[in-house]
Image: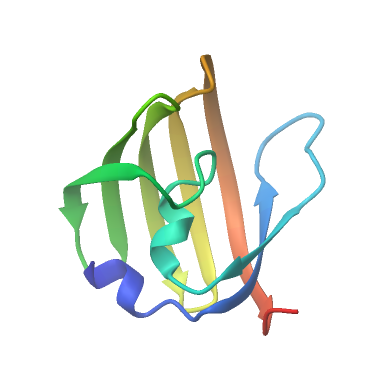
Length: 108
């Protein structure tokens, strides 16, 4: 996907935006930027459909057999800063998250 090509692999920190009681940041070792499209389902066992893909914006829907589904809107601000809005169903429960992702360095 065009929007993901410019993102750098490495350690990323995902922080919830706009929540009254935000959860602690999630740290993710990203070897393939496509991992950032399925923040609630991990990167295995899901099929994706690309809704939109430009230089700085990607929208996908995905289906994970037996684990749920989702729709993710990812906006690239820089190769080290992204905004993610994702919603769907994970393990039988609905979810909706708005996250800011920042690359913080190499994976540990």
